[in-house]
Image 1 (tube, helix red, strand yellow):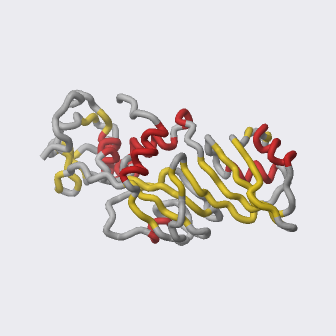
Image 2 (cartoon, rainbow, N blue to C red):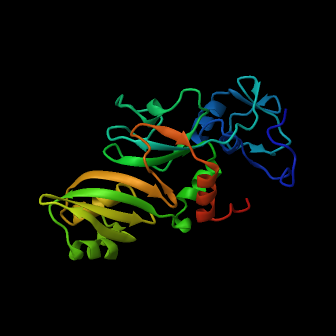
Image 3 (cartoon, rainbow, N blue to C red):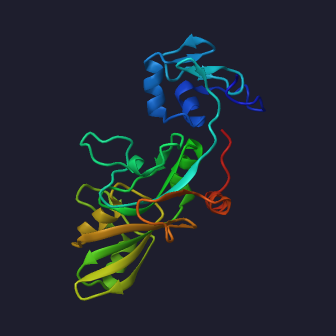
Length: 255
């Protein structure tokens, strides 16, 4: 059994670990571990180099003696609660997003991250190329957050968020847009849009401006809104939602 149906790209070669990831079997790093352990054969021969060249549609790949075929693509949205880490396993024994998923699902990986203290919309998929397109900086796909901060906020803070700040470690962070959603006496809710996503981007940016983040909730990724999905729940994207995300990031590049 071949991994793909023969096609126009049958002569193209890609690395063995990347091939396992493209087929939706596991992540590329997990594939590398399987390959180095001798559990993967290519045309019935063990190859321990994750970069061993594979001809899609022509070469036979087996894992633990079982022929590998393409896994159906899965595209999920999850409402991540606070206190859950976005990783496959955690050395500190903390609950991960995988504890919230149906055990019958095929392998999926988070598309980007939300830190432990953050909550809201998280995408997961076994389509690694699609995930890379969603995350690619050049797509400028907006991510929208509702952020509760301590104290009042006004036009000056919003302007500084959009104009950007330099952090103590030399990074430069800015928001695409920022507005006040609602304001009470002691706290303010902001809506912040990012078209890039550096590590702890919003928290670091606000900390540099002397603002404490009390809650951070991602409510949308491009045209996809979190909506009324309950905390801890996940569901498959509808065809219309998947199509709208694809349209927002543009066509897949030829590789």
